[in-house]
Image (cartoon, rainbow, N blue to C red; front, side, top):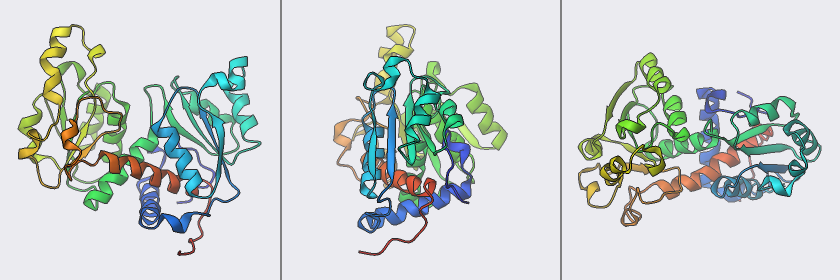
Length: 313
């Protein structure tokens, strides 16, 4: 289960055992972050962001800095040699001369995979178009594990844009590797999960139900993963107006939900979770964002082969 030198391009690149190892390290870090403050001293992370990002880039940079390492990189292509026409292959080979690990976000699907083929250092996919966002999936899984203790025999509701939401597709695929997870897929007919995701659930023998009714199924959920219903996904505005308020979670709607429900969201939110939910202990999305930093700290350590136990402080 040695991840040293590996690339992370999609959530399924790591086995269940390897992900469990990551989660164990992340849990130790979250319990005592100060103990890991110097484990990456002398190491350098390159952030290569070909499209804007706030949360993901900050999370990776904070992760490396909190491990005692340093960060170089760019947050938009116009600030790099890319604006002069440099290829991804040449960019990553040049960056590898300076850095120990690279994190890349790119608007074109498959671009990070291309970079990994030319890179002598580990490359992490921080989002490539509508394709994959594996560290968000690791964040989601770690949050569920920390909140419930395990992944087995839980009922997960995924609500909103299930057709185009890459985080939804990746999370479903990852959860299928655990035992007894039941899925409730809540969306307008126009935004149902793609057929390949449905086929994956059928092949795995997973129990799932597709519905348009959030309130009906809310009481049975252990986790609710919210995504935004986007107006631009509808062919006519009447359908959007008719359905948009059905997928807004507020304090009143939570009256029938379980006391230990986890309300998750990859962020940013718009209006699909009302701000009156923020003070509810079931609102997990900001803890989820913090967990993203811890799991990225663990990932950096593992990819760089930093195995030694930290000195307790």
